[in-house]
Image (cartoon, rainbow over all chains, first blue to last red):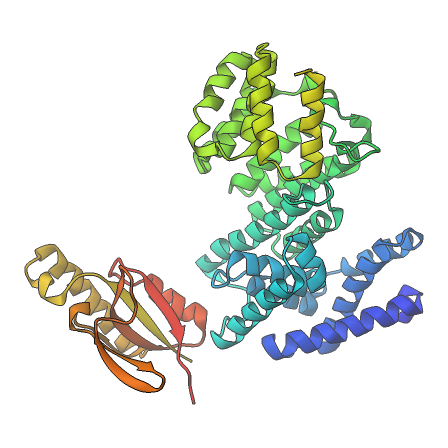
Length: 381
Length: 113
């Protein structure tokens, strides 16, 4: 380990952490088939976390990540079993997320508590309770097989997507974006895609996360303010990640098993492929939203479709569709923010201001609040 | 490992005799018990009489007190139970998912001493 990392302090810390993790995990899940490999994997994973925070070790991070790449069946199987156990539907979803972050992604309880804005004690209890249920109810430590696999994969994907969204734009009173959580979700998504290469929706979610993160350098300006998609400097987008993501999405499509993640990834791909905002292919985006609605008809998807539609039909028709969602989305800040944008376009200054104030009242994320406040000043209301 | 499947139920066993649709449902339930019984998965179980027949013993400062009614105050009552002998929670859940009674099933591991 020391030889591999070349930094004794970090090597010592990660080995200790891995042993602690083993002490926590093994009594619960049983000693893995290859304990040494398990420890090494955990240590390497932890080392990547620590090194990632230190730019000087960027090259070594790349080296360590490469050492993950070869097909390492025994360790890989253990990680996959661990993911499925952490995301077992017999555990509450909030516990699934917490356990996955703790046991698979190597977050500390304190970090997880901070990410979800609850006290460390509450989070520790949540994790302890989940571990106890795994032991006492005998939740199996294995990858489900046959027709049990797909629904269980869905549960794992839901946890990763929740984790990603929490990091990508957190709901609570945190900086606009906590990259660690989103990037860890992406890392887990890659791991899952490597372990389950023939699951189209695993690829779909991976691409969705990758395409969103590919834009991350353009999403905030130097002072941490949100830059909207229309105003982003597209030269800052990570073109290599975008090209790779689109390739992966084509591979998923050959599996002929369409799902909601693949369609959302395709929408992100249409945006990623537009060289400028005005070149965005809105017709295709609306068609993709129609396909998404056939799989899962939710008010939020309808809202997003209406936004895309406004770029084709103009604000009046789109506003009608958005207003129809008032009952189900009245408590959602983006419903009011969307109405405000459409009302701006229609020159309804007073109504737009009312809608924007309502959005501000419901919004908790500081970066989004700041954006709304900026708009309120701009429109001069 | 042993688990108990607790079946939710709201209908009195007496009512089903007057309801031909329910008679068919109970036939499916009997077949279900027979099937898993033959496989050795269900090792015990019963349907219970309705909640109006329930009597609860509560303990106040260690003193038993007999009161009328079930101890769970809820719309759903426990209509019956089955004891299953399976490898793990997943297998117990797979059996619970095939329950033909159209009511909720709570799966609880039993304490083995």
